[in-house]
Image (cartoon, rainbow, N blue to C red; front, side, top):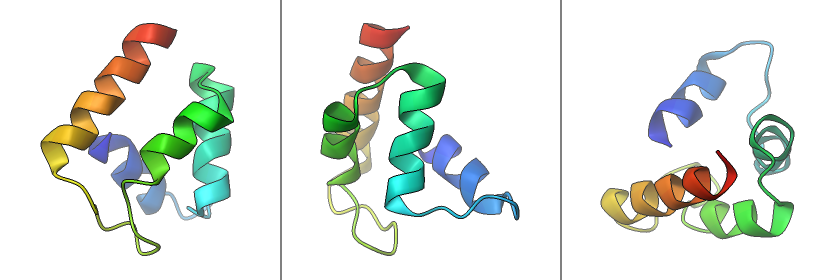
Length: 68
């Protein structure tokens, strides 16, 4: 999860807003906006984790396994 977020933030052509992040997850991985919103809620507005990194990664892995 953190690798994807870092990748998107480093891409100068991509504006890493919460909506754009949700859109990427939906278009690239088929993750519903509702489900990806749960993941987004684990970050503050500046993309700092508001939950433990291990918990975020666990949720991310579970999402990917359901959609992969």
